[in-house]
Length: 83
Image 1 (cartoon, helix red, strand yellow):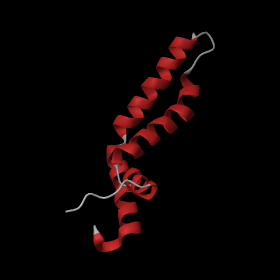
Image 2 (image 1 turned 60 degrees about the vertical axis):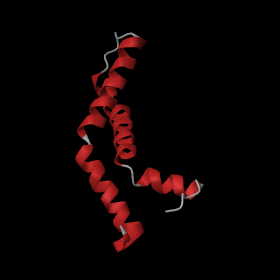
Image 3 (image 1 turned 30 degrees about the horizontal axis):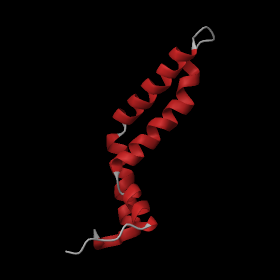
Image 4 (image 1 turned 180 degrees about the horizontal axis):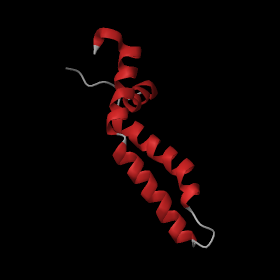
């Protein structure tokens, strides 16, 4: 089997079909929207940063199954029955 050249479309498809990329994205979105609800005004910047990191990590860890569903959806949508 020949090695495929790395092109922008190859990288895009690789990102779309990799469940970890969706887990990372969902983790960042969870941190962006949920962390402001748990931050108190008396927290230092280090505590706030730690809460953002913790929320993103929990979001990453909790979204394994939904990320596989998203990946499967894009594979069916783009590749059809070829995969």
